[in-house]
Amino acid sequence: MKKAEDMQETMASEPLSEAVTIGPEAYVSEDYARAERDRLWRKVWLRVGRIEEIPEVGQFLSYEVLDDSIVVVRTAADKLKAFHNVCPHRGRRLVDTPKGTRNACGRRQQFVCGFHGWRFNLDGENTHIPHCEDWNGTLNADNTRLSEVNVDTWSGWVFINMDPDCEPLRDYLEPAASMLEPFELHRMRYRWRKWGIFDCNWKVALEAFNETYHVQTTHPEFNKYGEFRGWAKAQGRHSNIGYEAPKGMDENQKAKLRIASGTDPRVATAEMQVYTWEKANTNTTETLVDAARRLVDELPEGTPGPQVLQHWLKSAKERDAARGVHWAEVDPAHVGKSGTAWQIFPNFQIGHAVNNMLCYSARPYGYDPNKCIFEAAVYQHYPEGEEPVTEWEYSPATEEAWSYVLGQDFSNMAAVQLGMQSAGFRGTQPNPYMERSTVNLHKNLAEYMGRGAPVKKG
Ligand code: FES
Ligand SMILES: [Fe+2]
Image 1 (cartoon, rainbow, N blue to C red):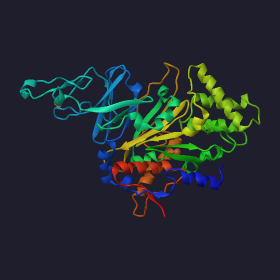
Image 2: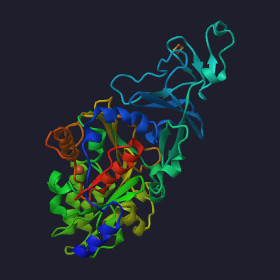
Image 3: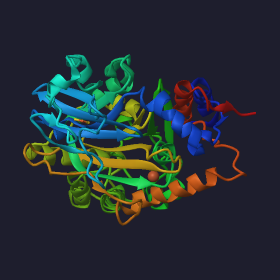
Image 4: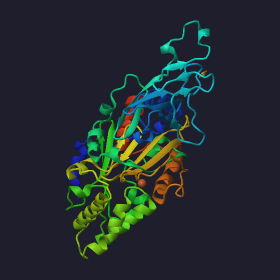
């Protein structure tokens, strides 16, 4: 544990280390929510799906945010294109999203508009217009093609940006991109993915996961495994969070695959793994849980925590390697620095590790600031050919539909949204050390929105 004065010094020298207040407008104002469409959502890179969802030429998926719908289609083995999902004839959505589903997907040789039959090839060029001659030669390739949208990929995800003048994706993602690449996230595949319409602003949903300050109160069951004090750092427009290493633990132990403290670290680690597997279904894998269960048989009583951790990870890694699952090799110092999760501006969180990850995203659901579309997915490595087939599963914000631990997080969301609308609410006061990702989100949001910057306290 750092001494109080050391900690003060670190905190004061870090960007955004001062205490601030953030007004409720960004969370509760319909006017603000409407302004987000042009100033934010149409300007930023948005993660819309995973490359492996559209492996074949002609496969597509759609993504909706407020009034915009984008279609991303594979046009060649190594090429994707994205278009606004609107027919240039009279504006019909070209591809319909079936009611109750997160997005449209499928495979086409061409897109045919269902209203009057205009046709488009996968590159978005118009290929057929019934009675074309009626326009007296005024229709041309430009005014009949689909409107293109920027699309690019990074670490296995597909991103789009509706701003024609946007910066390249890779530049936009720095320094998160460089920090996360050693984890080889592109090799992971979905274990499960769920989405729902939640009763809170999209920022409230994301801010339930971008800090560790809530763990001791919202998830009290974890307290018996040790105190997990976490830090948060501003990283340009993005941010990251992580856990401080308990005294005497090396860099490796800063990893998310952390050891539980307790009288017998073998037992405590197994208990915490089983609890996490059964009650959260996140942040671990079956291999890790099984290896933790074997600790009491494989190690003598009294083995110190750091050795338990080392053995546990080594044994899980070997079991995985034997079945063709290779963890990313990441320098322990880098693991420590990268933390446990990155908040990619504005609405995507990547909870990375060397063998699994947990990602969250949230975006508006219409212009009601009190609602959002929330999604979460867990990914891990699989032996080739054994990846499960998954789909976005609609799941209301309940413990039953997700898991006990996520249910605990969800229980705060609608309650926060209600509280923020109170006449007595004076704005949030985020913890300057542990909740800095929220401060950074609003600092950056304010740059796009032209309002709502965090205000220094005192
Ligand atoms: S609106 Fe698409 S063909 Fe008429
Ligand atoms: Fe939580």
